[in-house]
Length: 247
Image 1 (cartoon, one colour):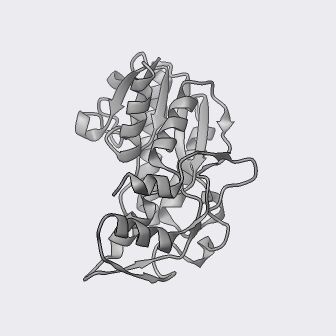
Image 2 (cartoon, rainbow, N blue to C red):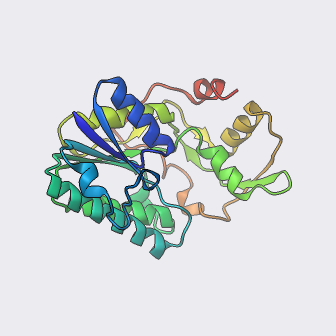
């Protein structure tokens, strides 16, 4: 198959490209750095010519709710419109478990807008909600780290390895459109603060972590809000196994 990956130079996008190419598919990399701008549509028609499926693994930088919703809305509309013109038969979205239970998070609002546009759009689709990735905890801590101290929300999560995310996206993209896919998660629940501590230790970094609900992840995300729902698909790689590869 000929498959386009939007966000191809990002972490998950690059892994998805590798997974698809490893299966013998032809992959078109869609990224601003490669001359395709999803916000303006520049280069998009040429990129999607002859493409069977599109995987949207794009991300948005920090911004307020309106900015994030506008960004995801614009890029998704452009991707869907170009896909319709090109005769794309399957649009696959990387989404997030729990976004419909949390109102105050700007990024989640943007992902909900993506889901709305795709589910109402002209291209047959599959939306795949994933839990947080194994590298999420250290990334969150890095946002606030200053003078060896970082704040982290004590979220309960069931994290998944980035390579497992890519494997599922590749599998879904080469299959038939299925609408809403079951939640996809890693095999074990974890505490985000403990994950950040263990990741920093594995990387040889000393950071004092301060648990707090102040910040982008408020108390409405506590408890089981971010855990996968009933009937979830469980990926194989544990956090400890992933961590061993970071040392």
